[in-house]
Length: 296
Image 1 (tube, rainbow, N blue to C red):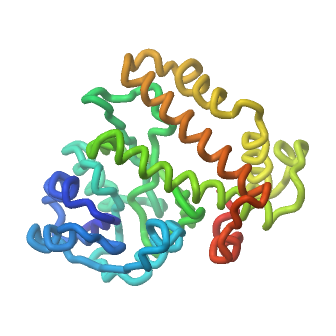
Image 2: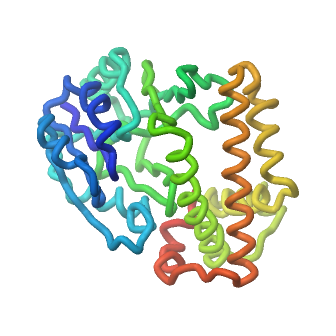
Image 3: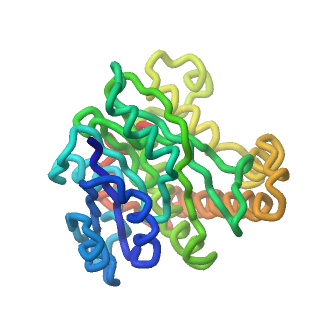
């Protein structure tokens, strides 16, 4: 009753555990974007269907536009069922969540999508408090869903949404700290390009419009710009996660995670400044995606 889609890029290490957590599903699709390890062969051996969309090696992951990559997948992957659940290779579906997913599609009501609660882990500890956001839209009707933003895309459902019980467990540090830092170094470049693309697509920043703009997307743009213009933004991010969200209750892993997120924010700040000063030029492909990437 549910199809599964798992976007991958060199996930030979994480994929077995992910696939084992969805063995209850008979329509699992691995959507690969050019793995050079054994990801594709492993997926096929474990019974998953594989769709590959590769990009030139000179381009970032997902071809530099994760939203476009995922939207292409929703349109071209031959799903067996009308409902699709999307998860990453470093995520695991718990038994309670699997039961909730099946129950939801049996009686969805007017809903076109469902949010699930994700638990992030570091050093075996659930980052219950310091986690940036625990809820993600993952179960949906593919014809009623689209993604926006170059990286870390937001899910835009066309219709009502509800929430499910059970947890989706996330192991973001399963490949070690070096891999996390390498990945977020790449992500921060795309985040900086996204900021510049948004500014190209919109009029000048307005503090007033951040609170009173009638259009939601226009209001969100100005709210994001307000955040981007905060002095000492990485320190603000740390304070938000560690103090206001009580990340200190997550012990040492909570402190580590808050520090890493503030470092990630600082990388975005530095790379945005380079683009503003013309040290680096945003790619033409990036700026051409301002319509798709400007809303979040």
